[in-house]
Image (cartoon, rainbow, N blue to C red; front, side, top):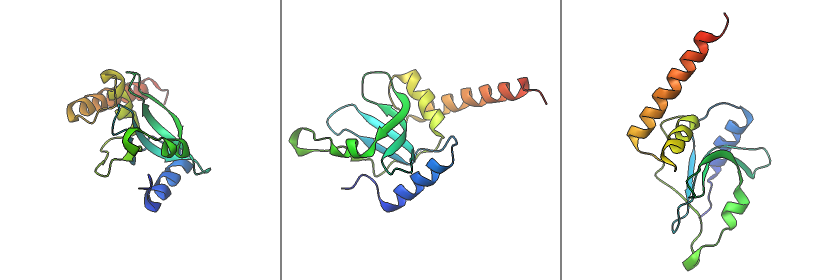
Length: 133
């Protein structure tokens, strides 16, 4: 299976051309390990993805990864990195990143995401109130 469909690739490229706090569009995972990635952008080079990367060591972080490198990983039993066909994000990447930092891993648990979204909303509101008019 190709990791990205044509449609996903186009949507990721569109996001990559417009820097913002996008909703992640794709989730990759290691079917025999703890590594998980949520990506929201693809650079114009067609290989550099941006998103939340969790290699399973308890320190998920925002950053870039190579699509070709992820696709080239060979796992035991002939397995490869997979795309979660049922993944549908409901929050911007910053919410997933904040929840992951608190949990030590990428999480899709609704309570963790709702809590992170509320914390970030309060922080943004506070920043706006401190900004000069």
